[in-house]
Length: 340
Ligand SMILES: NC(=O)c1ccc[n+]([C@@H]2O[C@H](COP(=O)([O-])OP(=O)(O)OC[C@H]3O[C@@H](n4cnc5c(N)ncnc54)[C@H](O)[C@@H]3O)[C@@H](O)[C@H]2O)c1
Image: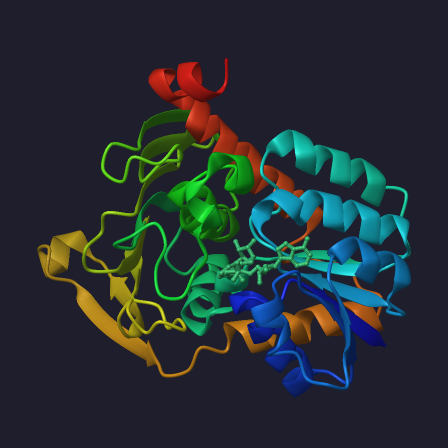
């Protein structure tokens, strides 16, 4: 299978390395508009300036889309129309409406695979937590409390489109918090219908949010809290899942920046009458971020064996985007400013 990559920035390069390492696919063409970034493309690969040309003229079977958010839905739609299998980064679109249009197109492409890159699902700590939850050994979930935050809107070597609503569609919640929302949905299996939120852009003063404070409840009574932040001076990833007979704490996450702390899963087994609030705990620690590699392996396995995409499907993407938009609109002031 021949692969094209649209957008050769931070993630385009990461995907390239991971495709080479984990699949038999050959990356034959890359589209990149920035001349400086083009210089990083190996000489045996065809270069197109724009993703439209890659899609229409590149001789490829699969496309990896790692463009700024404003192009995601257009690039996916065109690729599907051109008969390409597609792997697209999160967020799947700027808005839910854009993504619903993609879904309509995809419904006519039953022979093609479409997967969205929610790589956090493939972290080893998350996979272990999912196995424990699904085993029902601690009973049902009562609540989930998550914090995911970084200290700036644009960190490390990122480009600045993330701070512009026109180009990104949203701020820290759409960029980073979306991973935590996806995990909350994935791990709990719940659909959250009652939502309260405060959305703020008061600190960095861009036209996208720098903080989202969220409280939500599912029809089954599961409550989830999330604080997605770009004023988290010490970078943090923490998700506590409380079940009937214990809790799981995902603390820290191995990422490229190595700034979110060691990746651990604390397993707390509770017996309130005996342990009087000091329960038994064990902690698993993980030493490698295998999420990017395992996500690509998953995609290629699903593609080669013609299996349904179950992690990062278009339906997942739609439901997570629906949640993002409900959260934005749950704050009356934010809704008035950007959705009326
Ligand atoms: N899964 C994750 O954890 C994760 C992490 C970071 C970013 N992402 C997502 O990946 C996507 C890309 O993010 P990034 O950090 O690599 O951004 P980036 O800005 O570093 O890279 C995007 C690249 O696309 C190029 N580009 C812009 N317009 C183009 C066009 N018309 N044709 C071809 N190339 C064009 C830019 O020049 C740039 O090099 C975003 O959607 C982002 O949200 C996902």
